[in-house]
Image (cartoon, rainbow, N blue to C red; front, side):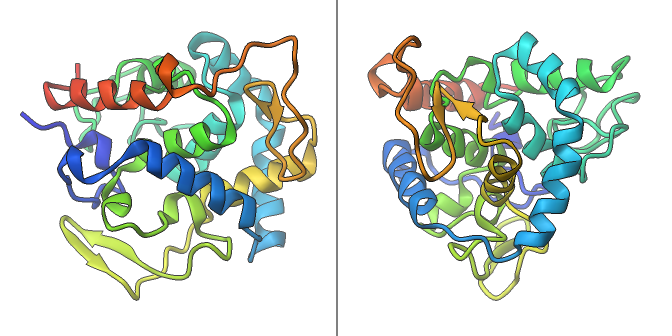
Length: 247
C-alpha cells in the first residue's frame, strides 16, 4: 500500500507518480532558488531563528544519533509544530501517545528526542540515511520530508520558500486540492535557515557554509554532494521503500 507520509503538508499534498518528479532537477532548482532568494519577512524570521538557536543543544543531541544536521532538525520542528516540545517531529502529534496523523501508529515515546530519532530513522523519507547535506541536498531533503506534490506541479514549495521572494502563493488546502491563491502563513525552511546563518555564520552543511556568501568546502572533509554516491539517488531508493510500507 502507498505510504502517504512522504507527501505531507498536514498532510494535504497529493501523491504524484515518482516518474513525475526528477529529484536531481529538483535539487538543481532548489540550489538556484537559494542563490537568488531574498527574505521578505526578515524580522519575523530572525525572532523565530533565535528561538530555534537557543534550543540548539537539544537538536544537536538528535543530530548525534541520526546524522541529520541540527539546523535541518530545528526548521522541521518549527514547520511541524511551531517548536512545541510536546509534539512529535514526525507530524506534530503528541509524542506521549500513539500518533493518529501520518505517519500513524508511532509512539508513544518517552521524550521529544526519542520521537525525533524515530521520525528521522524509521519514517519515510528516512532522513537519517540521507548523505547529501550540501545546501541543495538539504533543501531537497526538507522538501521531500514534506512531500513532492509541489515539485510535481513545478512550483516552489511553501514548506521551503514561504517568507522569501521565491514564493508568493499556492497551497494544498485538503487532499488533492491545490489552491493557487492560498498563501502559506508559516515561514519556510529556507527563510529560517537564512536567519539562522545570520545568527551564526559558522553554521555549515557538508563542510560548506550555507550562507549565500558560500565559503568553499573544508578540504579536510570529504565531499557529500556527488549524486553517484547516493545523495539524490538515495532519495529515490527511500521513496521506493516508502511505497512498500512505513515500518
